[in-house]
Length: 114
Length: 116
Image 1 (cartoon, helix red, strand yellow):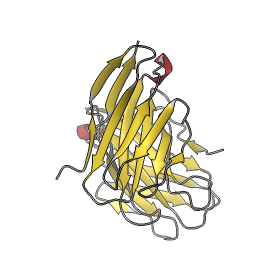
Image 2 (cartoon, helix red, strand yellow):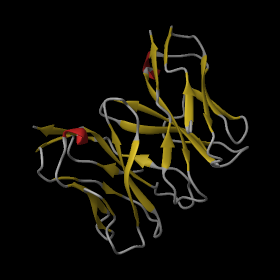
Image 3 (cartoon, rainbow over the protein chains, first blue to last red):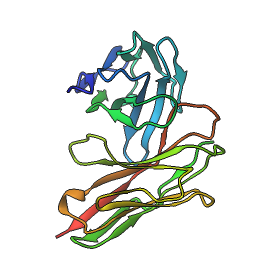
Image 4 (cartoon, rainbow over the protein chains, first blue to last red):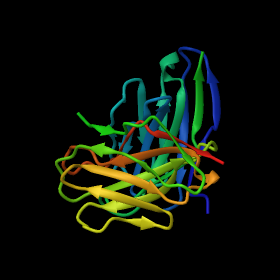
């Protein structure tokens, strides 16, 4: 009963380093999402994937890339990390077809860029 | 531009009392779903309740209920008989003002404190 699993849970990077956040869901959901959460700003959508093979930009895509590897996995890559990317990152998947279902979230990944 | 507004950054309530958290949004869609999520200190995002916009009846889940005013684009969460475990950040989530888009936008959240 894993749901949405994201790794790593914590990461410290130096400015300019790269890293990939991994996300996998075992609920056979079509849609997957990456959000970032910053104090006072709620959750902001970075990228999402409505189905395998498609990705779309959200509110704050700059500095990030994503890959929908297959139906289960959706990764987020920071090519050259910046201190402004210090945040908590959440992966989510959406139940059902279309836009009726709720999001299921992973436990979050805290990223610090020095 | 997407607008989801939670105008109350912080709220407090006495244990066993009732509190209402507000949310307003903007969408041109006619058929959509709205959600409230709870985030306790553990950081896990937990679905509290969802509302179908085409239903007149307000959603209810145990002590949690919604006051949905479609014309006003308002979606408030009422918590009755508040318990210490209700202390958390609460976020409302709404669809974007973009036909067919399959994502959700979140408000900035309301931090709820429950006073024993």
